[in-house]
Length: 121
Image 1 (cartoon, one colour):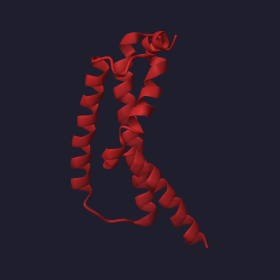
Image 2: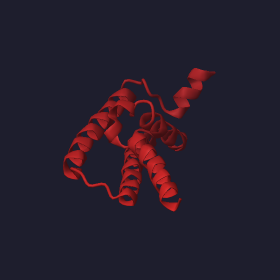
Image 3: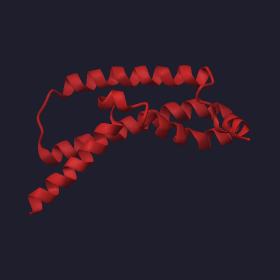
Image 4: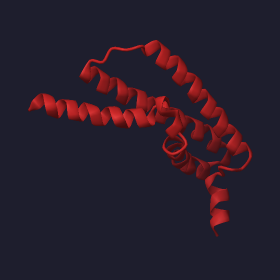
């Protein structure tokens, strides 16, 4: 019974880690970018220039958390694989989405909190 419970827990942690990691690049716009945006909003209230760096930091932290959760689940399940290839591909995808975030903030598509508040009024 303990092994089943442990494997179930590892599976849940792996799914959450996968959804947060850049391995699920198709899902980034629906999970990581909104989380990073929510992370950045309070910083933009402190100072507008903190918005973009906080947005990028939040995005990278969500991806890092995904990798940490995947590593934790993998170590519980002892999964062997091609880790180096996954890391390289994931890094390229993460850099691509980081560039997309910078472009969207620059174009005003993802506004900081003070601009968002003006829009909502």
